[in-house]
Amino acid sequence: QVNQAELLLFSVPAYACQRRTTLVNHNTALTDALSLLAENAELSEEEGRGVAFRRAAAVLKALPSVVTSMAQLEGLPCLGGHSLRVIRDVLENGASHEAETTKQSERYKALKVLTGIFGVGAKTADRWIREGIHTLQQLRESAQTLNRAQQAGLDHYDDLNQPVSQTEADAIGDIVQKAVACVLPGAQVTLTGGFRRGKDTGHDVDFLITHPEEGREVGLMPKIVSWLESRGFLLYQKTTRNSYLESMDGPGRPASNMDRFERCLSIFKLPDVEPQGTKEGPISAAPQKRWRAVRVDLVVSPISQFAFALLGWTGSKLFERELRRWAGHEKAMSLSSHALHDNTQSRYLRASSEEEIFAHLSLEYIPPSERNA
Ligand code: ATP
Ligand code: MN
Ligand code: MN
Image 1 (cartoon, rainbow, N blue to C red):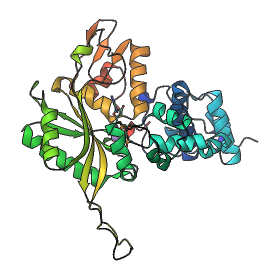
Image 2 (tube, protein in one colour):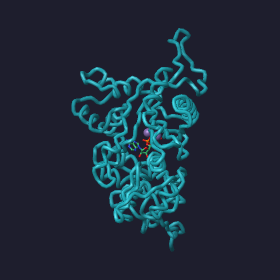
Image 3 (tube, helix red, strand yellow):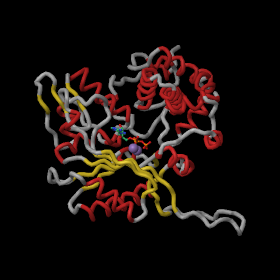
Image 4 (cartoon, protein in one colour):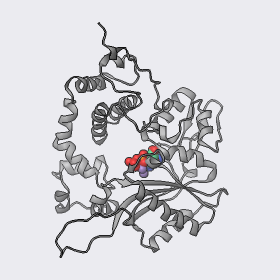
């Protein structure tokens, strides 16, 4: 007697950029466990393991219904032995022992808290933990010197760890739009990142800015930043200038997947936009804060690279990684947020839309709302 569910086999292409992954996930119990292990691997600087767990989770996110038995996973790509053991544990016992143990471990908890500070990565968190710092309190009391980003991150810790809503993203969008319209009329602002993919919350808000006339965007970022700063909208900002041309020492391959656009990582001071509710509290409480800190990323791209920048900054991170892997391994091309280089023909392939880039890569076009791998 064969169980009905076991007859339901899934079929999924190997690369996430060949699949449509919406925000509807039928297998959150499985993907939560795998994502937690992926995060733990990344925080422990085990990138390879992290990617393996991310890929496995992404395959399950793309399935059209809930997985109920191991037999249904037959033939699915990207499910290695370790991921399969985690899945089996969840299916048989309702939870992954490894994921639960990890979640409760002191090291994971400390890594989460410390890397929750803007400007603190896995390396710094690891060093602090080895020096006995596991909590914000311990960090504040320690003699550690923090850089400007980390200090701002610590100052605004609670705000920055509260998800940004769509209403807040819209309000930030209005401010950025106004700044850009004032300093360079005709320049265009596009929402990217998770909000462009349709997510209803984010850890930050991402924008890409360009001008339809090539070259007019040069020097734009400092002007936007001054406008925002003079009106009190910035709690922190760090602007990095465009270094794309300097980096062109090989055939279209900047050394890492970091792009080289003029960019600004910032913390906005956003006046309250959400209804505040009726907070109970002592009458004599300190005056209520009427703003909150929100992380905002601004990127400026010349119009000739706009499609590549838009594709590169829309995410998800795994989708981007998979696009580059597909380009390299299957098409002998190098894809970045600046350009697409055909290594066989030794030439750059132009594109003025995301659709054209997918076509160059012989991929079916996947809209942003289905790039949630
Ligand atoms: P969240 O809601 O958590 O913000 P997100 O998908 O918007 O999710 P981000 O970290 O804001 O995540 O990144 C958005 C996109 O920008 C991703 O596709 C990522 O690859 C790209 N990106 C982020 N930082 C860089 C960088 N330094 N260089 C190039 N691309 C980057
Ligand atoms: Mn984002
Ligand atoms: Mn971002």
